[in-house]
Length: 473
Ligand code: PLP
Image (cartoon, rainbow, N blue to C red; front, side, top):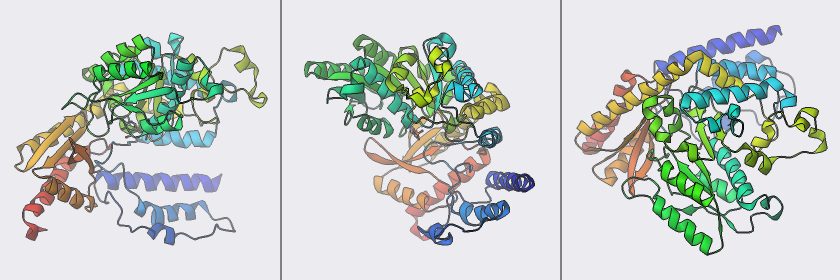
């Protein structure tokens, strides 16, 4: 007890100092470490004798932290953000301390009921219709570890519906198909393959938009039906990873309804923006979706993992995944009056997932979360206008907190990317737009501010000028 209390005090002081150093950009974003350097700094065999908690903390800061890429750093603009907050960290600590396993209502009633309430809260805050609320009766939300899991779970439910349950015994028999665009996140084809559907059918996008062409989808579904396939699931994306393109959910949704095909909407990143009413249009037509997923761990101050998935047809989900070996039988489950989240996800066991989101929503208020999103979008807009005004730079995309740009020639863009990738003081990641290389910058660190934005822009311009004048590098 005493040793633990002292260690927690030390860990808290270390973390707070670390957060301050990040906010002040006193540490690099990416570590100055060569492959294998952490491997060789660690003993190759486990300790025979117990070590003190203080020793563990000391080694964390000595060996591990210097080898980390700091996703919370204000100049971390890579990928999409994975942000965090003190409320989220506190909740993870309390969750770990309580050590609850909430696979079923009976294994910790409050863990399940809190998750029902918190996913309903978030559905309200994001403007999702009643059909996705637990309180609505047929639907509800569940916290998954990732958007990838949400795709897998949605595919299982879609197969359940498309096969009327037959796939549970017969397998997929090479009959069922998934549809998405080539811009869908790689977790979508992965989910298709893992579900036994093979590669998804890639639907053309409307030229120059990156958005799925609903006419092309309709034609492909017709052709597949004519060839004896069963269209099972369409995965539409609201905010693709490369350029934040938004598939036309209203048209796709109507088509899916008509064709009785499951529609899953992946809004892993952009979904958080609908906390703000001015971005609600991004999910127009969402009432036509069968499932929807947003990563609170990307842009909602909630540490990873925290993907929130909603369905309007929870029976399809639980029919697809329910399991009832005798060792899990209990009166509450038998009564049919409780939610057992084990049947809404791939693993059986689960930590108490909802405490984190509950703390975050209460500690920030929906207004605080909205303010953070608007702040990041303003910074992205400012970077976009700086790029537009700069000779030799071209703005490709500015959507929400994401800015994608390139240089005049592809060689110059590639050079800029390689210079940026060796600069430890900021992180931007590559993408391609219409087959041309481009640089992505996505805002979302809890510490990013106008000062960091100007710092980052100065670095990007300097790297750009080095290309024009190699002597300057
Ligand atoms: N979908 C989209 C649009 C994403 O941008 C990402 C990750 O960036 C994912 C899915 C995968 O998310 P996860 O890591 O939670 O599986």
